[in-house]
Length: 208
Image 1 (cartoon, rainbow, N blue to C red):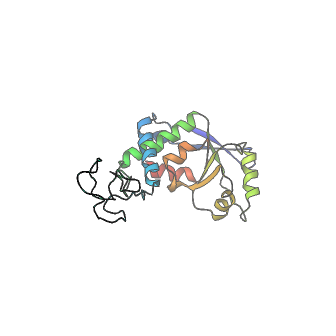
Image 2 (image 1 turned 135 degrees about the horizontal axis):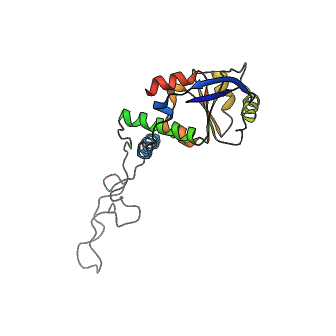
Image 3 (image 1 turned 90 degrees about the vertical axis):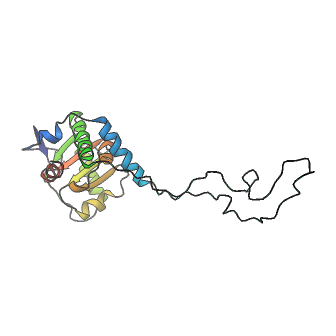
């Protein structure tokens, strides 16, 4: 499977790259994508929510009124959940929402996401490039040349390039990652994926 390489000016370079069919042409597995995205989002949760239970509420433990003869229900403590400001019954406690997903399932999820993007013509390959200094305007010009400046984009580089990362940071719809950082959520969330020419070999080494 071959794909044309385009320049950052949006023109054909005449070069072609061969994509591994074991990654970019797999039969997509929707459930694997669901599990991996669910785990990613679960891991983003802090899980620091907490409500005070009756043992933690600061009130006197003195009995409020005599047991009998008041005409109302008996009450033994101001901390009781039936009173306003009392403890919460079965309130939320700090917890970790993370869960395990097997490595092979995560690999299949990323392959499936890449296969979907390629099938939908939302994946392209750009020649390796660099930016001399961090300039958002310069990175935006590259996106305009590729006709993807209005889409949510994910650029995958072979290695970390600080200037490119800093240039894209102010653009709300643009994200830049290296080949070893790709995850299913970013792949699914992006409308257009741009792979640098050098990142393909690293992606294939990662997922094969």
